[in-house]
Each structure stands twice: as structure tokens, then as C-alpha cells.
Amino acid sequence: MDFKYTTISLNDVYEMSHRHAVEMIKRNGGKEEGDILTILMEEPVPVRFEKGFDGHLPIQNIDLRREDIQLTNDGKQEYEFDFKGTGFVVGGEVRKLQPEKINIDILMEVYVDEELHEQAVLPTSYLTRRNELSWKYNLADDTHNVRLIW
Image 1 (cartoon, rainbow, N blue to C red):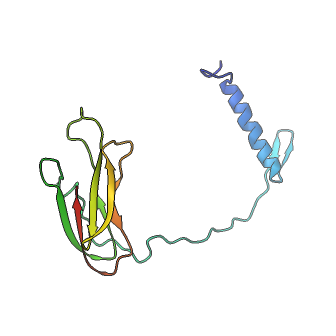
Image 2: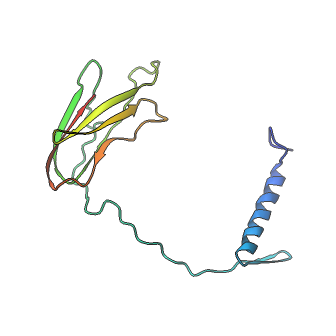
């Protein structure tokens, strides 16, 4: 029986998959002798080490969700915090308070030490939302101020 809208059955898919696997084995030096496949072994070669966020260690967690901080049209529209370190990540989410409303994009300005860092576009749709509201790394190891305005 064929899959809907195709001329291919599940057995056809199995056969194609097996044929492709045998072709790749042969292409890479292996052999097929009847029902027996011989696959050449390679010595594993380690990949180059890549170190991310070198010198960055989390020392504090300020999550707007956990702090119950809500920036809303009819309420607070600014949040500010200070931290000592070399970077930050602001966790949180943008969502509709009334499910029947349409999804929109919220524009949030992020200032770091009184300089505009970014104008973040934060969709309310769970399909396209930004998982972290804002972040910045490689700052001087000092005390910094972050201000969020929407």
C-alpha cells in the first residue's frame, strides 16, 4: 500500500534505504559479497577543541520570570539592574496576557552603561519568540548597569 499522495510503499522505502546504505559502504571502500557486507574501519581523529565563553562564569541569576517582573502596556515599562562581571543574559518571555488577542512584536530597548546596546524585537508568538530577551558578553570586568525599556 502506497503512502498518501505518493507512489511509494513502506517496503519501497526500506529497499531504497538499504540500497543507499550499500552504495555508501562500497563508495567508501567496503565490499558486498552476497549477504555479507564488509565495512572498512577508520582510526578516529579528534576534532579541534573549541572553547565557548572563555573566561565567562555565571555568578548570579536574575530571571524576570522568577522575579515576577512584568513590563506591560498599562503598568511598568522599564526595568533596571546592576551587576559586577563581564557579561549578562536576561531570561524571560514575551507573551499575550489575553489569548484571544493577535500576536505582535514588542520592541524593547536595551541600554548597557547608558549606551543603547540593541533594539530587540520580541515576538509574542511561541513559534518565533526569542528564548532569551537580551545578552551581552566581553564587557570589562567591572560594575555595569542594564536598563530595559519597552
